[in-house]
Length: 63
Image (cartoon, rainbow, N blue to C red):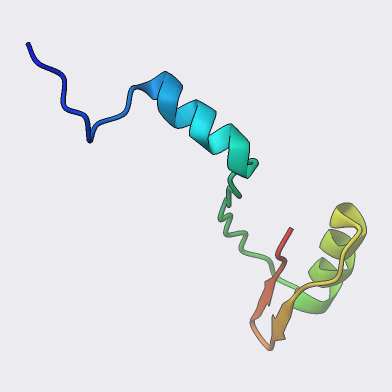
């Protein structure tokens, strides 16, 4: 089987990636709560960060 010069092996891709630094990974978690203001206080303390977005029925942290 002939190798294709335009395809990379996993090792080549990892090496190229390591030269650029780690990739940013994101995780989305939805949590339904009864009291938004109280929950914002709780999660702000837990994450040691304020939400990036606050709406009447929604808060979003970019961690």
